[in-house]
Length: 546
Image (cartoon, rainbow, N blue to C red; front, top):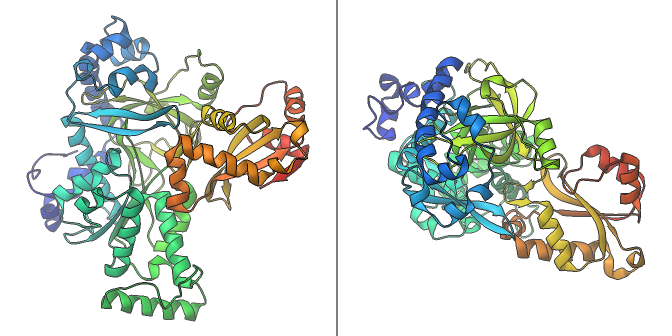
């Protein structure tokens, strides 16, 4: 692995012009050629360095309670699994004196809407440099049809639909801007002055006018823009027609005309791939697996999935096979809680689940991710709240390293399109504030036509209110939507930015929750109770659904 050596003083754009002579692939993607043993040795070396600086910090000493681990094994034994609550007073108050190393930037992400608006995370200079290298590795992989052949060049028009700063993905265009002269749509400085929704709309409008060579975005955002293009091109969107889309350059107008003739001849709707020839399509987000096939068919290029988060930076990337994602060796030290242990700890918060190392995973099994930051980061054995599936422990034709697939958030959180994180607290607060006569409720994440996610509430209302027109499903939906939006601005963005109304409600017959509890011999989970429980509730009959 030759990252940051040799020709590292050259810009990435200059290296692209001489990529075969300089072995650009080896410099940025050489970690894919590592054996599992060498990968582990790199991780262990970085982890040993992190244990030393973290254990000596005020934050580390507070969690360790005076203990001093001298090895990774002792670290895993002495440090309990942590959550953001264990860091909140230090990180939210930006107590630099308590940290393992001085940060150069603080990033933010959503915590729990309504109760805890944001989480903050410090990034050291070494963490930023690792992110830079890993971002360039993604660019190289995602624009290569085969090793040693990156297709991107200076001047390529890049559409960027990921969350801006202070989210971690907001760093991506700043990294790329220093390394290659992309024409970002819209330009980075102009985009920084816009809301996320405005940026996406303006960027896609510019792309329609000038062309698009690459697209980086949240998968749900890319899917929404794709659907808007298809509807507009086919005339399904009110006020548009296939011949009146919007102002475009002569070159793009010719492309649209050729695509229109082809689609009319073949009797199908126009899709973006008929007009644009993307060199790269990079996507990230919790529901990526639901949209990938649709996006691949629409754009004529296989989406390249990555996984990143504010607390863990850039963590994973797909390889050229697109059979799964591989972990970067210098981002975090991962551990994994087996699914059954994760579920047990959700039912019993006092239970401390066991963790496995990357080399101990089994194909086809799901695990909750636990990370320890490297390079002076703050988090130790931190439960991120995401589930991964091991798909190929021994790799595939592109790498000998383990390949994983992102599954979803942990079972007690409902994440819709990467925008909002709905918990039992969120639902209880919305019901309490609404003062609706709801007596029992459970919520599940479900998918419309297997692709578009939504929040489905199954509830009972007070028997005395059953026949009242004031508690119809429509009224329930409108009331609850108001309070979800009030508590969680990200929920509001789902409708404003993506046209998604994520709430469905089914009103069950009175007494069914209690009857189901007695039959099951246990309580019904408030979040994602499982298909068996949902089917059991539905088998008793419903009053209203919408």
